[in-house]
Every structure is written in C-alpha cells, then in structure tokens.
Length: 174
Image (cartoon, rainbow, N blue to C red; front, side):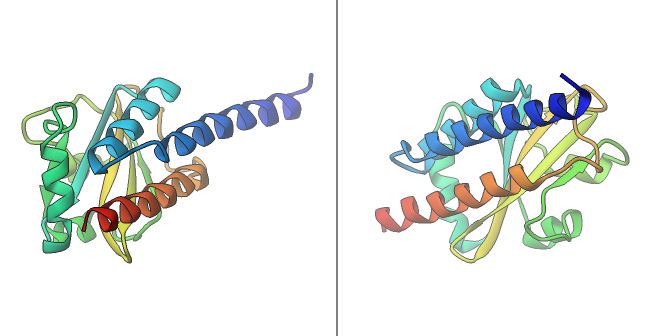
C-alpha cells in the first residue's frame, strides 16, 4: 500500500466510527440517554479522556439542563454559561473549533467542579430547534490531539445529528 491508500483507509475507519456513534443516537429514549450515548461513543470509539457539555443559560435550554442534571453520568460534566460568553468564545457559530494554543478563554467552558488537564480541545456547537444551545467538548492532555488545521466535517455532521435528535426528543416530551 502506498501512503495515499493508507490515508484513505484511515479516513474511512474514522468515518465509520463517527457513523457508528451517529447510528447509536437513534436508540436514545430521552435527552439524558442521548448525551450519555454520545459521550460513551466518543470515549469508546476515539478514546477521548475528557468529554463534557456546555449549555447556555436560556429559557429554551432549561428542559435540557434539567434532563442532564438528572443523570449521574452527566451532572458533573456540565457547565452553564451565558449566551454572550459563548458567542465571545465561539464566534464561528456552528463550526467546530479545534485548539491547542491560547486555551485560557476555552477554560470557561469547563465544568466548575471538574478540572480537566487539557492541552487540546475540540468544541462542537449544536442546536435545539433553530438556536445554538451549547457545545459538547472533547479534551485531551496530548497537545496535538486536536489542532486548528484538522478537518471538522465529521464532527459537524455528528453535531447536526445530535441537534436533530435533541429536538425530536424534547418535542416528544412536550
């Protein structure tokens, strides 16, 4: 095999792992299960040591926060911030952000009761209905795990699936 074929094979394997996580989201019966499934998938398929949620402190997000806080797995992996602070940290909207330098602004996304040692981050915004409501965040102590020059289309596609499933689950409970 040549180098081009190796890269293609690796990319196909990564895409298959994302597809596996995406498919498992359909098994979630509620919001809590959706994020527990997402976190378990990210941790298992990609061996990400730190995964957590940052949600916005808005009225429309309140039912999601309540569901997350009812989960023993998720409640300590949640941070709630203002929409203004979120936009300040992530002005690019729904585009995932990968960072391994100048991390202090991103530390505001971390849960206050869990201090992770992160040297690289993948911050993946998602929507509820038509509104950005937060991000799921992947962190690693390895400096080059996430770098700004990496492709984010698979993260963005998974975020779209999370958004659609989240809206379906919350609307079903209403």
